[in-house]
Length: 327
Figure 1 (tube, rainbow, N blue to C red):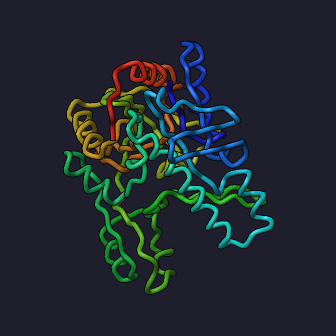
Figure 2 (figure 1 turned 45 degrees about the vertical axis):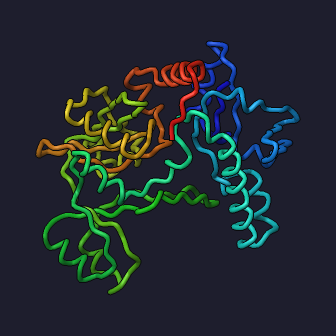
Figure 3 (figure 1 turned 90 degrees about the horizontal axis):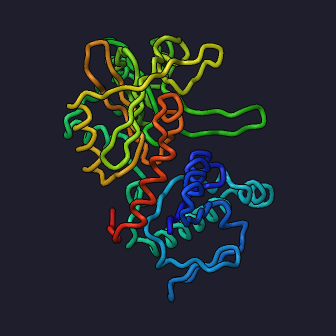
């Protein structure tokens, strides 16, 4: 049986499940938010899981796919609790929810995984160092907290700033707010205080286009994104201009870059993930970051890669093979 760990709003998983149903292959989806809403009984000794009043045969699980398994703050339970609990109480509930999910994944540690839980939390700074060790170029990168250091950098050229950790998404009554990559304007830099929180600053790479690469156990599926054609998406293609959709096409990676990506992912113990890379005007390729549970639908549809079907076939094939642990 294939066990799928995600959240109820994971649309990409919905499409993969359609293919599992097409092949009539046994599978079970556990959403992290449903574990607070549906009947649940998790026993550590003996190791047993009952969900929606139905016992789950953990011995029958051949492979586990970890997707968006968490996000307590985006759950229906959190929305209700936020109206009657203190903020520190909500934080405590979030920690306990995370501990329950951790215990569940620990019960499945001897299974084969597509994205093991221990590999999900990646550090952008560590990834940049690792990418260089594996043969990929990376932008000139600094972490600083002093205005004078920032001024010295800006005197040498153009720089951008981005989050060090995962971007923060804020849902407010008047809209949704997110953290994007943005250019550091000299006038803006002059207005900051003499001392600020340590921030990630990178030399701006003059790009010809961007690449989104979906990696699946050694195979790379790449898409070129001509985001530099629009002022809104020039620095961050996620800032979509719906009046001028960004052109995307399938892309054949140079053999050297593909080999470097494979070495990089193996060094991290990742068998799945989405990578962001820039092809610069100087002809080089610059690695930006990797998301172990990143989106792949945006690559599958425009490039006709049929990734939903390929992932389903991968899960089925490894569920039927003799057990092989991937950590």
